[in-house]
Amino acid sequence: MGVSFESTTALARMLRDRHISSVELLQESLAAYDRYNDLVNAVVVTQIEQAFDQARQADQELSDGRIRGPLHGIPMTVKESFDWVGTPTTVGDPAFTGNFPETTAVPVQRLQAAGAIVYGKTNVPLHLADAQSFNDVYGTTNNPWALDRVAGGSSGGSAAALASGMTSLELGSDIAGSLRNPAHYCGVFSHKPTYGMVPSDGHGLPGTHADLDIQVVGPMARTAPDLDLAMGILAGDTYRRTSGGRTLANFRVAVVLESPFLRQDPELTEQLRTGIDLLKDAGLTVEFDARPDLDAERTIDLHMLLLRAATGAAKPVAPRAADIAADLERFRAGARDRPAFEARGHDLSYREWWELHNERERERAVWTAFFRDYDLLLCPTSASAAPAHDHRPDRFAPSPSAQPGVRHEPLYWALWPGVAYLPSTVVPFGLTQSGLPCGLQVVAPHGADALGIQFAGLVEQTLGGFQPAPLVSSGRP
Image 1 (cartoon, rainbow, N blue to C red):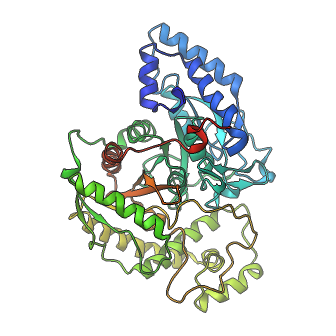
Image 2 (image 1 turned 90 degrees about the horizontal axis):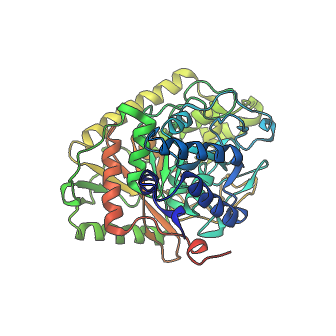
Image 3 (image 1 turned 120 degrees about the vertical axis):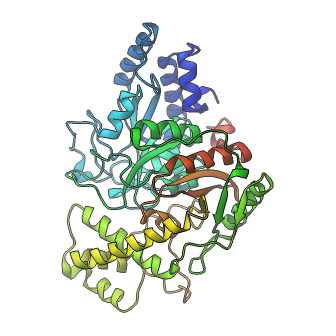
């Protein structure tokens, strides 16, 4: 598979030791791009000649004894929703194909200042508003593990590029699992930072200048040390690294693998249990009965309302009152499907939003108390492994066969820590019986991002971490 599947940390060391050049690394990434991108459609915009110019310059600087930073000469890609001078930021919307920003997003600038060479941008869903990545500008991104399945969203192209060796490091964003569910679906690592830790200037829909509630910017990679490296660059001094030498036996964690209100794939649950048992055998102290003192079902409603208020505010055009009237009435009658939540999110007054926000702040205090007794909380990332592609316009419509008391809410596990502004890391956790990747979500206390990443590294050492998809390991196509 070549060096394109080495970690960013290893590649940086190889560059500094002159075992490989930046030009050669870029050629390796582009070889994977040429080999697999027609199948997975992960990288949708490139500036290849510019990247080669930068790689040659990086090699010359290294020859002169100059190193810009820890990513000196490393080729990488970033999510399409980040402004990058010379390329359009469309967020999958044909109306924005002419949107060529005049400045590069701050997180991208920080990576470039550390020496990274950005050569491409990766695919997203329309307006970053789906857990699968397809749009009318760039088409559909496929999962390298199974081309008929989704790679996730909204950082789906990011995860697919990592899993197929087109990049060793990616920059994504997350409001309801957009970093985490693609990592889980594609078998890679991701980190959703504490809210506000990484600047988001230059990310999102054109014309957006204010930070969006819940949304964060963070890295994706194929190893936990690479997440740590990237967070030190993206967050700077606000990212407080942990001391080394800690083992699994030094952690006391709470584990929640199922919700009484959620329909979940049994294969996924079984694989998570198997992995947790292996960690226990390796010395981890586990408590299965511990929970934050929260009303689980009320928490779903709170989180969905805050999410839909945020995503609704970010839409280019607000819906007309007449267009949401029927769904709003259904919400008031007890409906809790996506169209109903979206209608209520659009309809909230500022006072109503503040009351929900105030409830969220009480919830955050509960989490703080919970983490006095436990280092971390481990839970699923999503309710299933990667599902099949589904582009039906009515895919979010209420289901007539829904079971009373059981909710089909794919965002549940992502929103649980997300709305409370907590950091969470996804670490590959083996394969389901159907042979699809499974990711464990590691939730850490507010501001303790490095602790979650450190634990993910220990899981990686114990269980093996990233493994190439059959598409890659078999030598296809």
